[in-house]
Image (cartoon, rainbow over all chains, first blue to last red; front, side, top):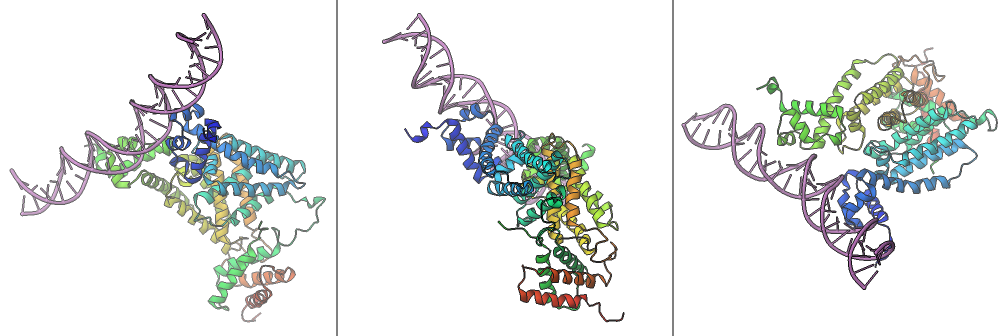
Length: 247
Length: 247
DNA sequence: GTCGATTCGTATCGACGGTACCACGGATTC
DNA sequence: GAATCCGTGGTACCGTCGATACGAATCGAC
């Protein structure tokens, strides 16, 4: 009949579930709705996936596969620390683009952690192993994996569950640099030009600007009008932001 | 007729729900079980809390109150950065001791973020404001709050949802130090030999302004127009002037 | 004692996750 | 060619959940 007839029932269910999951949270997606959208009876779903959790895990794993594909497409470069940063940003992007899938992966809604989470962990571990092999890590790669992953997941989940409190992704870049900078040692020991370029973290201006901003908050300047002081604070915040190359 | 009769129904329900929540996840705690444990009919619960989510939010808020009490008991010390570390560790301890309450606070299971989360955010922000006032922060306190909170929540949720992957709390200490070290500067920073508690000193602003002015001269900001930068330099000179030249 | 209003619980609804049981179709066997 | 077996698919159902309509009980006022 229809071309869909050729599809496996498993595929139809997975497609329907993924589509519903893109629009509603996992708790609000009922197996009944999935079955109806897939044109399949309920027992079919349970025979194939055993459980609602099993279905969700399968959906997440399949949705994660394309993410892994995009991640594997970015071959390792010569700079593993740069790969690390790219991996972090990729993680954030995936979370923001597939919020419900992501929540399923890293929220306790699923007792069975989908294989996707394990694989993400393994991928991160691989990158950090390469950092360690290059002598760039200040801690064992296993520990570094946990630290980076926990921070990354925390940033993503914070943005997903409290969007009004984290309206801007830039805090994630700051957290990323905090964590990575403290876990890695600069490569300037051998190859790199010894000086971090001006806008990089650790630049002298941001620190000084932040200091002045803090002190001005504690001690408002009488020599400037309130309007001037406000504009000054605004500039100081701009200068205090170590900034990141906006992609 | 029991001695419990004196208790408000609201209290009985809250107690029963908290006790059940200590042993099972929120999804596995049914309002029926809560009502039975509280010796109360179902409509009572819904009249008092309106919703299961409302009940859970109330339970979380009440459970969080004792955490806040313990946190407020630790008065601010002379070293706000040490307070920051203590706050982080307290956060982790609370999460590990009350996993289900904690998950309710920071997992998307609850559409209504309980007031507890907001208050935790505000408390952290307060500590970071004190750090900023002491000139110890390298970023604005709002941004620092988001960074620290996201990392802290990420560490706690990781330990709760993947205990087999995070069997050791020490990674959390590492993440804590990574984040805090990169957001704060040591108390004996160069910008000013400021003592940590000397926030009200009159000389703090001029020194910081002079430092920033010098660094901006060495490294012109790309984020400001030349006109803006010129005006900023002018203001900085004003601020760097330590008042009446009595000395 | 009677009445009215408020409080509380029984009984119930609709929807959910999950399952027992049956109906059909194609390959295998006699 | 007919009977049989087996895997696929669906209908109808169960127990439980969150949430509620409505009646029963309680209490103060007079």
